Image 1 (spheres, rainbow over the protein chains, first blue to last red):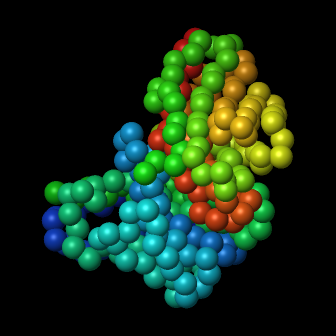
Image 2 (cartoon, chains in turn cyan, purple):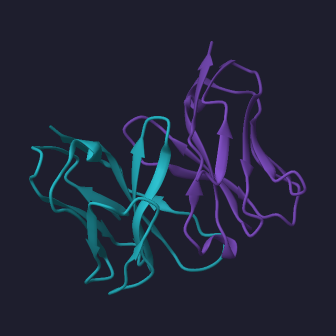
Image 3 (cartoon, each protein chain N blue to C red):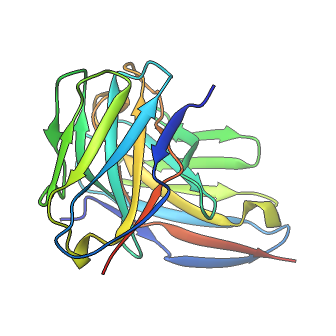
Length: 113
Length: 113
């Protein structure tokens, strides 16, 4: 039972390069989220999905795109990486219904040089 | 704008003491208030949560106190232990947690022997 799995765990990109972060879950979560964590700023929502085929913008969506073609996968893309996107990225899943908490992955540390 | 304000940013408590972390929110539509605990290199994990129809919720050594009129809630850790050393995030959501979570900026708690 893997829960929420993020790949890769670490990545270094050059400015202007593109990459995709993968989040996979085996908990049948309807909802999935991408957050970024920066020192002193907590967790900020980038994009989220309330079901297969749906996505919505969060608090800090600029420079990112997402897709949820299958219920178990939520992809976060950076088309042209910038140093400001250096961060730790967390994916989370949630079961629909009251009072269910988020299940987070272990994070991806991304450095853009 | 920051809808959930958390303090202090860091906290050092002696083993056996009481750790107190405070949060304040602005949106009166919030109706679900969880706390998450994060250890280094890991994703946040749900610790305890409260809804505004009660003023206090206790689970073991962890207690949430909620003041609806003041729009404030706090986490109390009784008999703090070195294993409690972690970063703690408060959060808030609408629709009993079905809406996306807004996180505070985090508190790094260190328990010293």
